[in-house]
Image (cartoon, rainbow, N blue to C red; front, side, top):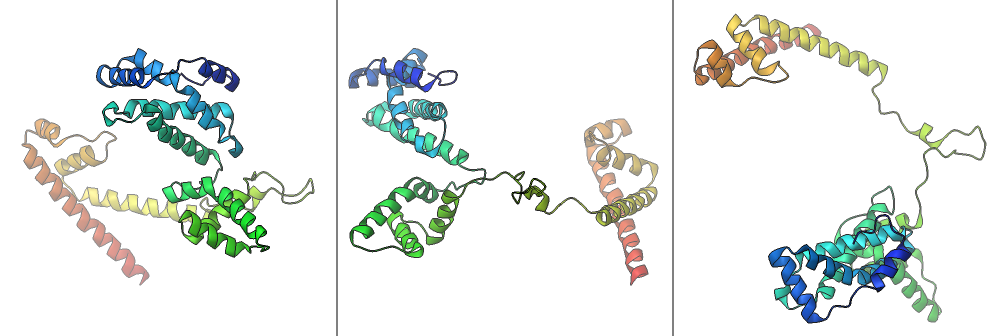
Length: 292
């Protein structure tokens, strides 16, 4: 059952009308899909547990994602669970599917929470989805004792509670507390105020760099031309065909054209490269001695 193109209310009503599977029927359908790839059995299994997927998706609405998208991700997790489920393990499919559904929804939420990646390790995921709940509980307990927790103290307690490094808590708190802003927003209330994007450093090559790069490229080209002229006609032909074509030729095809073995062409190519290397090194040395 795909969620695309339907409202969450429609999907919920459809899911609620689906059949309820007893353990025996569920097992039979799981075997039919695993052993025979029976798509009708898979469809029944998925449809029967869409209510579970929708129920789990609704718990993540507070993260601001569209409910229809959450249901779509939940259904993806449900289908992954059906594909990987092993009925021989003696576990109910619903129990197994919960993990896959939750993982799929959590991945979606974290991908779409911010343009800045929030994190992907298991500890970061645990922190992302539990930090605010743990923080609220710790603050309630402190308030009941008449204490007011400082930020650094609260961060340390959360780190211990969730089992993550302190710097992860500090980083996550900053990201969850802020939001993404457009680089096209103005820096002041003035209509004439410049946009934040104007303050970014331009990492494109400057004019001086372009001139230097152009000069270096031309120098290298001249060096290569000089090195090539030091080769005989056959060596030049091999180098051009092997290294200067968009679609380099093979040693075998050159050997056929020149009436040589593939190994002999390889030897001539290596000798030509050796001559070119000596020529390039000599030219480089001359330039260095000139500026010394």
